Image 1 (spheres, rainbow, N blue to C red):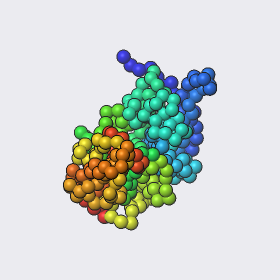
Image 2: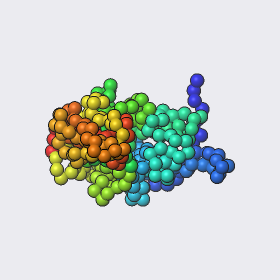
Image 3: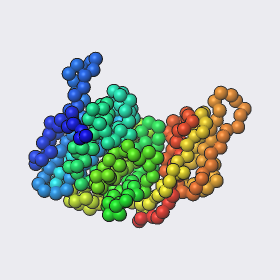
Length: 337
């Protein structure tokens, strides 16, 4: 049975030339607003025929590098700079972004675990459905800007995935490298089925993701990498003229071959990491200690690396619970300089 049309409507005309700023309007009815709407900002910049790129941030509401860079871009990118169409949604999960949370305060929904979505579902599921059935089919290439949010800090990288279609995989990997972050990653996802990534890739589109810092904030360095990367992405895929600008140091290409790259805690307590992000890791090396906070005089539990590589991500808060990812170790494949 076919799904009904999305309840979300756009106040912009995706086929009109020029620059438009508007909203994706999702009707809601709450105690505070009986006939209300979630108003997700959207900008469309079109200049004649050409490819279409979707630039998305705020898939998780506490990941600020992408949100900030895209909000800035909406007031800077001009129609005459573009060949084709650029659709910018700085905050996909607007309720989460407004609350400074990873998930939506309206329904507890994690947007990046809600695809392909449901037009008759929760607010988060309805947003996922609109992207899956309306926005993604318009596009040729998609850039989804992530970072670690409040609970993770991650080295800056552009990422792609292993795909069944070799040409689609090649284009995505080249896009991830061209983003121009200090690292490029072939990323293994722990829970891929309901990701935005999968919803885009299953439609045959070229998808590039990022991780660009974290800790629930941004820095001048992380924003500079993000803004340069967004421009590089548009240049690489032919929407904007110019030359791709790479980092001063040779870009490092990383691989996450399987789930063993993720180090997850089997204890609750106080986390001490022995390495900084980007540090070299040797198999068997102590990378973290967890201390029992209910008593003094007890030795910590040590966590050792199961592989060689570098520390690509770490838990940001010092307090850790069972099941939390405390570290991610990625293998170094090559230097691309």
